[in-house]
Image (cartoon, rainbow, N blue to C red):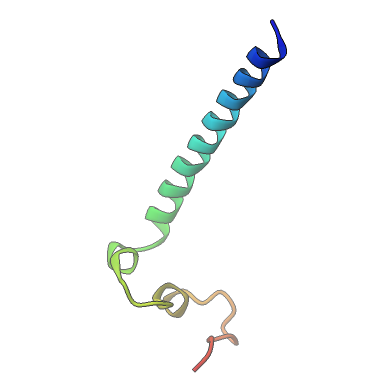
Amino acid sequence: MNAFVILEYIAWAISILIGAWMLYDLIKTNSAYSEDVLMSSREGEIEDTLVIDPTHRGTP
């Protein structure tokens, strides 16, 4: 095995990890937010809907 074959295997492993991370994030986001919020085009609607810090409401 030369260095290029090893780099190819490393690149495939990184690609698989990124794909798995994207799939996990898709499932997590889909279960955390309703379809109406995800499909909205109004900027900042998610932040206004789900406020983590109740004292912070964003800019008026």
